[in-house]
Amino acid sequence: MKRYGVIEEKNKREIVLLQGSGCKYKRCSFCDYYLDVGEQSYELNCQALNQVRGHYGILEVVNSGSFDEIDSKSMAKILEVAKERGVHTLIFECHYLYRSKIAKLKEYFSDFRVKLKLGLESFDYDFREGVLKKGIKIASPKEIAKDFDEANFLIGVSSQSGEMIKKDIALGLEHFERICLNVMCDNSKMKADRGVIEIFLKEIYPQIKDNPRIDILLENTDFGIGECE
Image 1 (cartoon, rainbow, N blue to C red):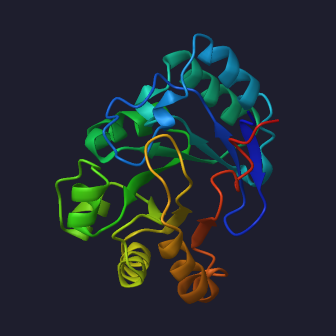
Image 2: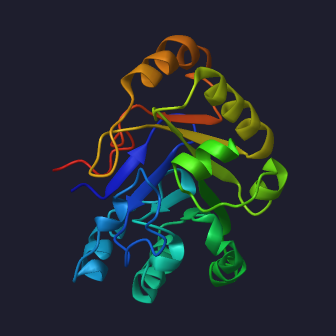
């Protein structure tokens, strides 16, 4: 599996897919990424981090859960590599339930600008909690966004509508610096709704595809990580 990539469009940056201890939450109805665990996570993570060259000075770190599920040795390796390669900005992912740990993360990486990306999936409360089971029991967009700089949104799930997607994009751009739209791919827990995806591709995608504040993953490997080598 490819665990290092360079994103050359819009917010140019390097990205690494690290292996953590697995998402502690595990209750999202659409996600099986917590299966990416192993006995040699640190060695695997070092292989990915050693490829970082400091391109653009920005490094995004993703894993099978939240930053708090990356082992301490791997976090130290991130710190070491960032200092050596001239990285000035680090981007980490975090489940909303672990937002209280953000301050400690920023303290650990105090020499860098640290940004947090939230796996929000939708601002629509009933859809997010009733269908996706995200565990974010907050309805106010402002309250949800206050600890985060960026957010992921999911597209292509049954019961989702074009209007819901448009509203999520508008609210996302209002409350976050950047957003990432992830088109649903079939996995072991949920199948994508092709009808919803077609609505997105025909009615919404052409209007937003060039927006510099929006990343769009039509496939979950479009950032150059996750695919088989």
